[in-house]
Image (tube, rainbow, N blue to C red):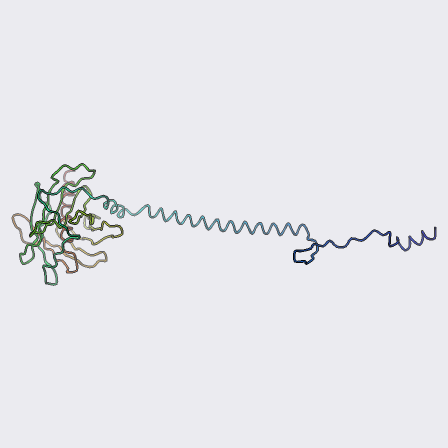
Length: 301
């Protein structure tokens, strides 16, 4: 026995009694491939990297969304705060003013302002237009628009409201253009405090006349998106105006005329054939009345 014990110590334990050696731990993947076990620190590092990547992507997308919302808010703020001139034009293009017609007047049925170019064969239409600058309106005023040959083209009527109006902002004066052959009203302007509206014969609001400065007036369409139809530049107090289109093209020229009929002064208006002469005429008349009323207000103050 001692001999066997000594041999055992030299040679180690018998094979049957040796503790079994553990094989390397294996992880079986879904594809059937075996891999050795992963270091827990490595797993934690990978998880941290993935987490930081997700945070970066989320932060990037959130920043893009914030920037987009900021741009939209800036655009809304810009649209909600137009320049003073645009605000003034928008205010003038509000609800149509009430109309108080003269007794016996006959509204026309045209869908646009009258164009007198059909009466002329020359390159430019020369018109004698009664000046309404500083004319005292004692209830009613009437005059004629004449051609250079003395042909009666249009009838000008100016009057105050014939019936009391209590519908908010009410006109203090009206200007009408009539057909002298039928007495039908072709166009009408209603003037109130800081408001000057142009109507077609069927009482549809056609446009607004805006005073931008003492030397500049705009005729602005009433329909959405129509914008400025033309501009009147110059000195209405001196009865000298140049009318140009929205792109600056020449449309008409206004100068004082030497003729005076029954104490009424006249303007000489030279209208280009491509211009709507009827619209030009009534806008000139409206500008002269606007200037007259503003001068009266300044004198009263």
